[in-house]
Structures are given as C-alpha cells and as structure tokens.
Image 1 (cartoon, helix red, strand yellow):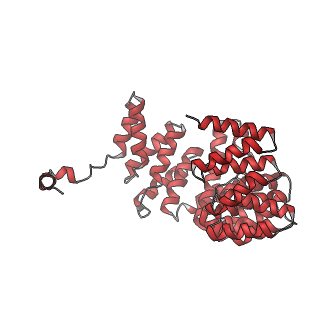
Image 2: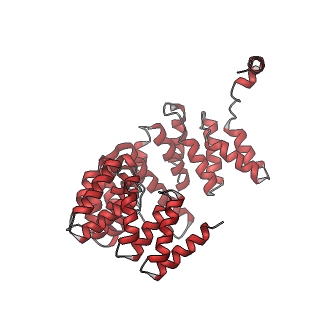
Image 3: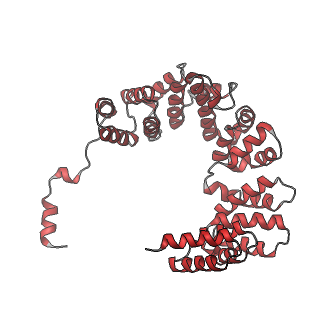
Amino acid sequence: MSSLLLALMLAAPSWAQTPLPRRDLGAIHDQFIESLEKEKKAEALEELARTPPLTMQDTKWAFDLFMRFPEVPVRRAVISALNRIESGNVQLEAAFMEYLRLPEGESQVFGIIGALRLRSTRALPVITEIAQRRFRYKDPGDAVTASERNTWWAQYEALSALAQWQGAKQLPLLRNQAMAAPTVAHIMARYLWKDSLPTIADWSRAGGSAAQAAQEAFNTEVPLADLRESYAAMLKLVRSRDADRELRHQLAIKVGLASDDAGAEALLAEHSATRDPDTKLMLAAALFASRNPKTVPWLEAQAQNNADPKTRMGALIQLRDMVPPEKHKSLLEWTAAKDPDEENRQAAADLLKSKTP
C-alpha cells in the first residue's frame, strides 16, 4: 500500500468509517406512500425488506403497509422485515397478539408471522385455534370473495407456523387438513419431509384429495438436508416394484437432487447392473436429476446410444452446461449427422446454427 493511500485512509473523517444510521420504519413507510416515482417506491421496499420492526410503533407502520397494499412486492417486503425481528424482542408480543385477534384474515396472517418469529407462548393457543378451523374451500381460488380467500390463507399460515414450531407433533392435524385442502401437503413436505414420507407414499396410491395432496408434496422444493436425511428411505421406494409408478419417479428425482459424488457413482453402478426395465428407468431419472459431473460419460452414452429419441435429445441438452463448449459442439455435430431420428437431427442442426457467430 502506498504511503499516500495510507495517509488518505488515516485522514478519513469518522463518518466515512461508520455505517449510516438506521432509518425507522416510519420514514420508510412515508417514502413509499408519498413518492410518485416508481424508483423511490422500489427503494423504500428494498430498505423495508431488510429493516425489522424494533418498537410497537414500527410494527404499526409495517402493519399499515401490509393492510393497505395487498400487492405481492409490498407484502413480500413486509414479511421479510418481520422475519428479521430479534426473537428476544418480547415488547412486540402485545402488538402481534392484537393483530391475531382481529377478524380480517390479512391481520391474522401478519400476527401469525410475527408471533412465530417471537415463539410467543401466549399466541400459540390462538394460532392453534385458527389452524383447527374447517377449510371452506379446497383451494383459495375457489373462494367467492377476497375476504374468504384471506381467511383461507390465514388458516394455511397458521398450519405452517405450527409445523415449524412444533414439528411432527402436528402431523395428525396436517394430514387431516390436507384432505380438505390438498395444498397443506406442501407444508408437510417443506418442513416435515422425513416424517411425512410414509403418508405421502400412501396417498400416492389413493385417489381424490389424497392423490392431489401427494402431488402437492412432490411439487414442493424440499430442503437438501431433509432429502439427504431420508435418502435411504426414498431409494428403497424407488427400487420397489410394488410402489406407485408416479411415486417412484418423483422420488427418483429427489434422490438425484440429494446425490453427492459417491451417491451418483452408486446410482451409475446400480443402473448398469439392474435388469428390471422400470427400475432402470427410475434410476436414469435420478441420474438425470443429479446433474453431477460423475454422470457426464453416462450422459454422453445416452445422447448417442439410447433407444428413445427423446432421451437422446434430453441428454444432449443437459450436457450443454456440463461439458466444455467445443465438446458439446462435437456432440451436436454427431447428432445432426448420425442420429436415427429426423427431428433430433434437425434440432441439433438448429442448435449448431445458433452457436455460429
């Protein structure tokens, strides 16, 4: 470091070395409401999202924005602010209790999120009562009025809070409510995947609301740590010829996502050894989903030798982000010239043209 630069740093005023003071939520609230420029409003929301309420008054400003502006960006920013509250800030508990007891569904959602953040024991019975209500509609989109939709979401948020707060203890309630509103299965998969897996497997073999709930669970992005914790159980179902075919396929994808290098190598070995065509197909789905570098040679073989033209093209497309550009170009050239399927040859030729400067 030069002596001049060092001198400039030492001579810097004290304000340049300290963070800017935190604006209270009132100022952010006013900027959002009073600004006519979209950029200023966006700046206010960005600041709001990283500014947790510290006082009762802060909570009121956040609540006002949440209730007055139902647009997704505003509510997302408010929820982000609530989720940054220090869990020990017990002085906010009274405010969230007040909002929980209001009749509007949006008020209750706001109160549930705040109370969950504080783990308020006073709020727990109220949240439980909301969660135990009977769902009037299977889906919020079926509700006739905005008020009914908000009531639906308040109950859903209450169930989500209980799953996060009390874990598997609430599985009986969640299972029951998922039959009335299959979307509840999303909560089970998101927060209680390992404990919910046997139920989801049973649902996959049923019809009606149970099958819908299973599909909701399959479509949920499950935390990687939870997938890895249930890896052996999922793989056992993937291998099971008696299990529902859709269950096997969906779990194969999750097995792939959870596979590390050792897992990918084990899948490759098992795929090569198995003679059952359905199991082989499921293991292939897991290998595709893994996107692990260990699968590159296998994918290259699939791109040229698999009997199914769609699988060949799928492997070729997947390799695009897994091999160097020149290697992928050579694979495209092979497909364009030699693939038995005319559509594949044309698709590869089109991709080659798109790569040409």
